[in-house]
Amino acid sequence: METGAPPPEQAPGSAPLGTLRQRIPATRVGRLAAGWLTSLRDPARAIGLLLLVSLVLRALWLGIPQNGLIFDETYYVNAARVILGLPATAHYVGSPPGFDPNTEHPALGKLLIAGSIRVLGDSGIAWRVPSLIAGMIALLAVYGIARDLGRSAWLPILVTALVSFDNLSFVHGRIGTLDMLVLAPMLVGSWLALRRRWILAGVAMGIALLIKITALYAIGAVLLYVLLTEGPAWWRARRLPPFDDLRGPIGFLIITASIAIGGLTLLDVWLSPFPSPIDHIARIVTYGANLRAPITVGICPEADSRPWQWLFNECQITYFRSDITVRAGDVVTAKYATIDFRGALNPLLAGAIPLAALYTGWYAWRTRDRLALWAVAWAAANYVPYLILAVFTPRIMYIYYALPLVPVAAIGIAILLTRAGLPRSIRWAFVAAYLVGFVAYFPFRQIP
Image 1 (tube, rainbow, N blue to C red):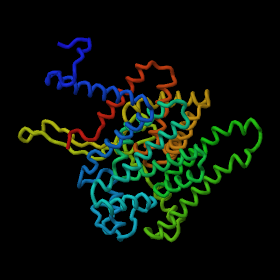
Image 2: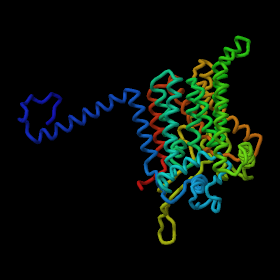
Image 3: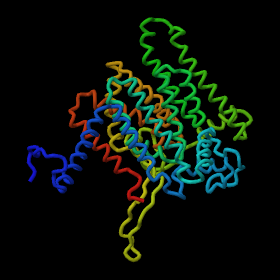
Image 4: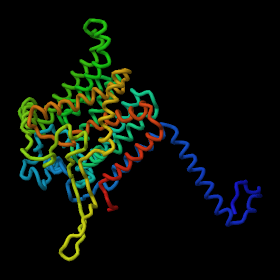
């Protein structure tokens, strides 16, 4: 019988064998558990563990489905195959080999996928590794932004966790599309700009533009943040800002444009039929302007959606679904999903957006907190343009356009949880519910 008192001291080797087997493993496990829990009190170790878990979850069963393409992989993987001279299986069948047939976007993103295929073979893992790497880079950039602008060692970890365990961020961090490939350099460029590493920030933004032109919104976010943080001093001085204050942002714009135009020129010479980058840019802009939503009836009759619907997680998209059907004779009695990739936000993240946005906007106005100001700038630049387009044009849009909004939503929620005076129990309850939401949307419903 075990008691609270320590066992009597014994000479080495004098304890019974059975007692040692019961006591020594328990002692080791207890010490390891205690040491592990203590180590998590160190923010550096906590963020390391979080990133490791994020990497493992994103890499888990990365090659599944082995022979099936998930959502827009059908465009970008097949474009990469055509670039490599491999046969396409769906879109772009019969396109000239060695060229990028997906001309509505610059070629760099497809070239990254093609490079992965060249190294790893034409398989699901190869298609998705670039997005996996980009997703981890995006998490590091989000952590860096929140750490540099925040006033707490733990708030950046909370922000990173909220991004990591959001379904939309998770899914696009492990499928072969362009969305995470462009978001990673957008966030890195913004992080570098915050640190006034303007040249490197311009290089990162130029790379983002060579993947997808929507990186323009991140450039707008950087400039808006400069205006929100430096503009009040210029206004109080009643004078134009001195050149020294503008040298960095101007250099940032010049480097970004140089990388984007120069890189597009080189890519087009190699992979595209356009005689000049201007012609290719005109093709990209024209293609985007002609993407019109179908005339439909109902809230979510098709996969398209309006920007205000993203805030409530409406109009979710089934990216890939594999079901098991149970029959009793010829009658279907049940249907279970074994794999369910969907375009949707974590329901807890979406549900908290309205309150978090209002609180963060008020907090930024009241305190001039730089993390809150960054959130306001990033949200305005990456959301308001879609809102304007939705109100004044018939352009088609989808819920995954909200992917760049996930980091700013995470920051807003973290600010609300940590700076609004909420009880600790409420914070932990939200985090627990958030993890339940992640599990509920986890794409693998059964172990493959």
